[in-house]
Every structure is written in C-alpha cells, then in structure tokens.
Length: 123
View (cartoon, rainbow, N blue to C red):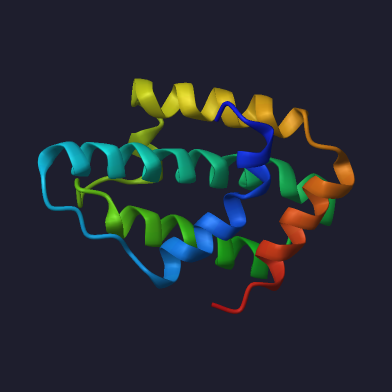
C-alpha cells in the first residue's frame, strides 16, 4: 500500500467487501479484483499483527478480523486460497510490506481507532 490514507480507509473498504462482493466478468477484471483483495488481506494482516499491542488480545477482534479475511477470500478467484498460502505469494508479500510501512506512518491514536473499529464491528 503506497498511500497513508489508504491504510486508514482499509476499514471502510473492508466493510464494503463484506456487504457487497464485486462480480467481475473478464480475466483482466478478475486479476485486478484479486490484486485489490490481496491488498485488503495484507492490510488485515497488519491489523492482526498490530492491534493486540494497541487494544490487547481480544477474542471479538480475532473473530471480526477472521470474518473480514474470510469474506475477502470468498471473493478471490482461487477458491482454495488461504491467508497461509498467500504468505508464499510474491505480490502479496510486496503489498504486505507496503501496508506495514504505511502503518508506521500513522500515529498510534489513529492505529488504535482502526483496531477499535474492527473490534466493535457488528457485521
């Protein structure tokens, strides 16, 4: 993720994917959709890594972030994809590196606010 504001918007985009999965007709659109989904999953991975330090270990947070990741994976073209096997994907790892960098550019209060939004999500 190259832009700081993108990290902050991850929640809004995430929740959009939860309630309105996109349907893509051609191969180029599928590839583009998969790239966006990988980016969303990379951002979720950063939240998984970052939030326990900011809001403490929390089962509800874990459940909500898992729902988000599962929703993204449900829209991914490869239905056998998982968070674990994406860890081996070069494009995903680049997106994850970018998301981690973007997260370091956001102040702790804003990071905590994003974590709390995931924690309090009722979707």
